[in-house]
Amino acid sequence: MAPRAPETLTHLIARLRRAVVDGRCVVPFQARGMSHFTHVVVVDADGRCTLRRWVLDPKKAEAFMQANGHFMPEDAEAISEPGPEVLLEATGLEDFIVRLKAADIVAT
Image 1 (cartoon, rainbow, N blue to C red):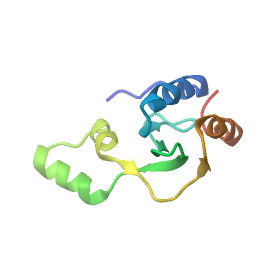
Image 2: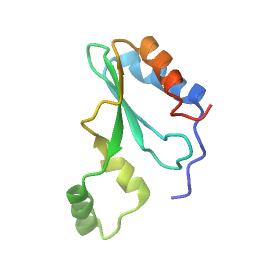
Image 3: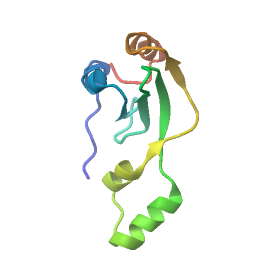
């Protein structure tokens, strides 16, 4: 997989707004300077938004490799899940976006 072009904060915010139209969602994204997904925004059914790391379970990675005979970066992104640590949270999307902007984690 070729490196992914940096995603701007404006683009991420647009993706978040499109994704939460139907309620609960998980939106992975890349932190500043990274070319792969490193973090994820989780929106619960009640509208609570959290920022977490995008975590790859080594056992799942090994099982994938055994089953498929290969393991590529896009495979890691496909089987990763939100980690347990909450890095940022808010009760609604607009408040979360304000906090995300202040956190300066995404390229502008």
